[in-house]
Length: 83
Image 1: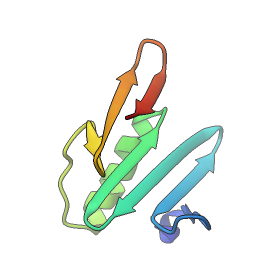
Image 2: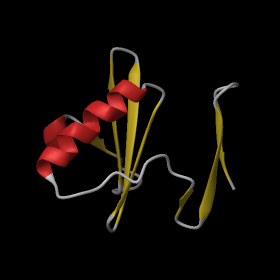
Image 3: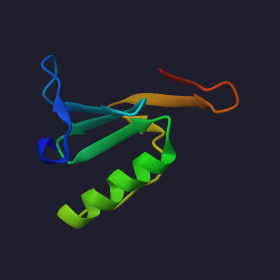
Image 4: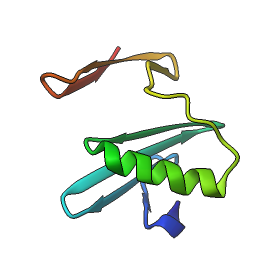
């Protein structure tokens, strides 16, 4: 991920982030799972294309669960929370 200009978190080495032109992308890796978060879907799709070129992987779509947590979204109000 560092080759794609992501910065590895010093607090959790499974978390990478990238910020440019007011756009922020977070990528979380855990064993063989990956979660990508950004307000800009176009950037998520762009990153997916790069990752598909580099790795044998599949896109499972919008995450509803990760690491035993439920992910809830309210797109209308722009909110996201975990439970």
